[in-house]
Length: 478
Image 1 (cartoon, rainbow, N blue to C red):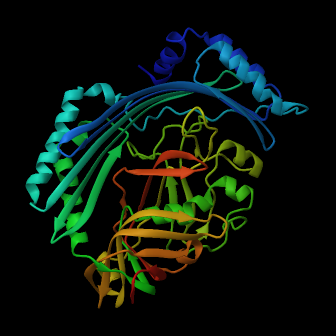
Image 2: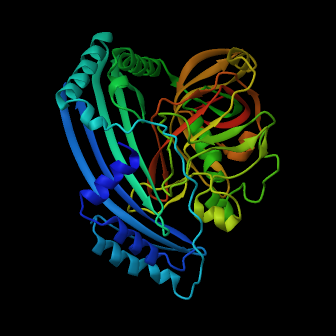
Image 3: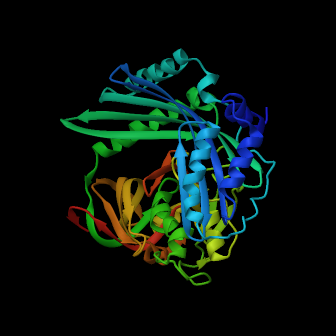
């Protein structure tokens, strides 16, 4: 069954709404608007958590609703409801039209269509019986505890989601997407000589559960979580001060996502609140630094066949060889800035209006061997994994806590450290990149990005990178 047919069944056949009448309601609501749409959503999700040798929680949630939006210049009229009925849409129409008073706009042409599919429209929740999911978590727990006698606690969680969306425009054109999403997380606590440390690993994507039920995959996650925890047992206090920092490949791209990516979203640049505002064509990073946002990668967590406005996602070059090339755009900001939408209009759910958001954002590979990058540093820090971080979009200033990091001494990876925090300015750090590895790696499918109270799944990545100087917050002098 096609995505449109599935969506029609969910939003019309199941609810009793009439397609033609809904089209007329949307057309009437958006008459005189510059843009807008009706966003219909139906979502099923489940979460299982296994902890302390038992199933601690198992939840199932089912939600549905719509969001109706009308745009007049910069103004947005938005109404949403969990009731899927023509009456509810009619009441929402009266609300959103308030923004159109005295406005005589011409409705913008809709997004181009697409015949591609970046993921199968499978429903992970139905693909496997509940008992098999619990059995997997039990197997993970048992395998982990058999690996090392220092393990004191094991926690494993499984999350699955199936989301169907249908976007109806004022001219009656429709676009649909059926989106699966799964994730498996493992964490362990180890103890040695009275000291306790944790380690974790996760993986996921837009697919069925099958791949994550393969022992070759989940056992690797357990092994990695245990390795991480055991490394932390040996960690020493982190150095402090300004020093060269080598960022490992993969998940460390979350620093790029936060410190640079958000500043390249269209709304911040239209409002000129980003440190990158008005700088298209300027050198904003070292030569060799190329950053892209790509929502077209098959089965990736951050990928979307179409965004939440119906625009097909694309591969947007943000920075090329250090030169700022463009921003990520939704339809509203693209229209007001006189550029094309890039397929980055995203929303958490029907209860939220769309805004420019990242999909899979990463730095392209360079030509350096990772071992040569490490050898180039006499004394510094090697960061492999990050935890939480925050950034000020206007100034570009960021702080990031390292969950796995090591001293570099005489070009070699030395003792693991604990308590390291990176403090810096995004554009400044991008201009201090001096070596880029050939080992581009994407994260394993665990990212969730927050912006203005909305969370959406994203991907990050980068190769091994040397930054000549970053301030490291620690507890010992470097």
